Length: 213
Image (cartoon, rainbow, N blue to C red):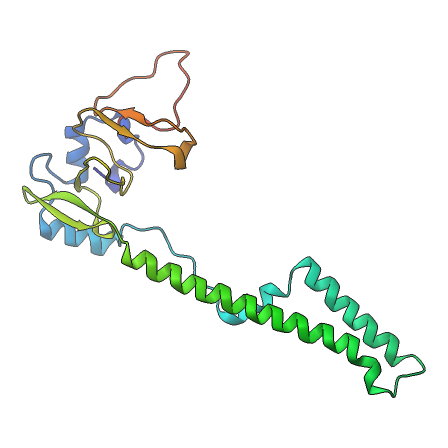
């Protein structure tokens, strides 16, 4: 169950489920009502990470020109043009072909790379929208399936085998549950979780994630 703003200064893992539900303005039996969930969604926004503005094609093109090797090639092209412009063949147009050829190749390469990266970003964004996960929550005493982005603080989330944990949650009821935390802690083995509160013993190493979250 996601915690509420008023509980933000306290560690949810050290708060009893009943007290946490009271602070979140929800019920451990019925969850939030649809009206409450809609209000929370309007207030807090969707349950998703803040998206970084997508770079434009022009920015991607400029970024391609900032590579170390590309800068060396452009410096070489400028040096070639300057040398020929101050040499005995400065009036010969053909003497500038090496420098101009380097510039043309660099710009064509940067354009292709920028366009490829731009299209790859579009494809990844489209794929993300197609595979948006959904999860079961308790709303008004009934289990309903909603999009992960619609989860709000105070929701009772129902997790099953194979589900992806959709937000920071405090377990209020659990039976034989294990969670993969490899992406978070690097630990390869699944970690057992419990809804019970457990005080850390003196001298016991602190875990990166609480056992009930």
